[in-house]
Image (cartoon, rainbow, N blue to C red):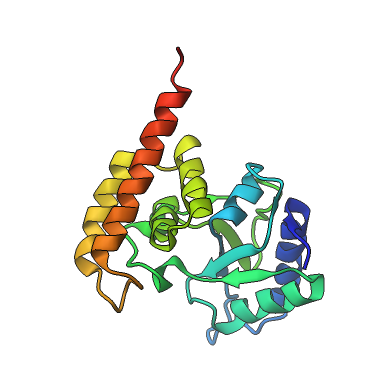
Amino acid sequence: MKEVSAQDLGALIATVRRILVGSPPLPDGSSRTWNLYLVAGTSHLAEGWRDRVPHLELASDAGGAGVLGDAVREAGAALDLRLVWELPADVIPLPPGWSERARPVPAGLAVAGGPLEVLHFDPYSVVLRLVARGDEPDYVMALEYQRRGWVDLGQLETRLAAVVPQFSSETLAQDPAEFRRKFRGLRQLIARDTEQRRPA
């Protein structure tokens, strides 16, 4: 499959909106609204930090199940786009307040009203998830969140401390000590990057 551009992301969101307009209302007759979250490289794509990504990483409040997940998969198949549907909570415990830290997307992707709200997933949760996965491209992606001012290292460490007690083999697909080692690697990468970017 082809790499994905910001134009492809816009087309996917527009297609999902069209599909959801036909969804039945809630039992009380009110219209239903869904949150579609952009995650990791997809956020970078939407913000113009990258021109292309190999696939779109998306999530919703309900994981991959339900009407929104079906609509996204239908739209992705129609547009021949590769999708990864993974809520960061599937990998790590989410730090408290994650839903309040969701960020608005650029105006071109956000349409007022209608059945779909598109947001960037909480950057702190995403960075912790990237650390848990822990390969080099993940560290580079996490570093970009810090460079752009979306994540503060001190706040990230505070949020990590809040979730570490919840780590177990059921909530994290690795030893918590291994996660801490990977997190130290990210901290060192940020420190080196900050030093290199400091004016001489």
